[in-house]
Length: 108
Image 1 (spheres, rainbow, N blue to C red):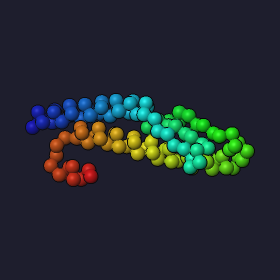
Image 2 (cartoon, one colour):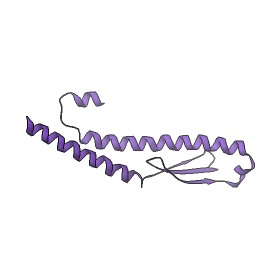
Image 3 (cartoon, rainbow, N blue to C red):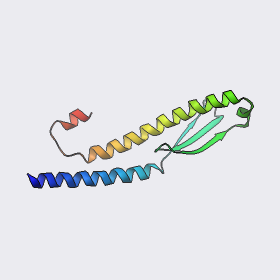
């Protein structure tokens, strides 16, 4: 019984290390999002850190329009980065879960 428990603890520790490594790797995964007319482009990491924002000159003529573009495009970029982040971390976590009968049905 204790051998099983020690093995499980070791596997959980290994999984935790893989999760941390995945988080670091996600700092290098870039997610791009653009406004529908490509006047605004945003790049984030999969950890949702803004890396760049490119704004077409014509958007500087209308402050309210620029603000709207930023809100819409940032929200879309954050949603996309969050999906990548959660998918990657879930895959690592699921891989490291102990084999408990019925658990895989519960996780899906």
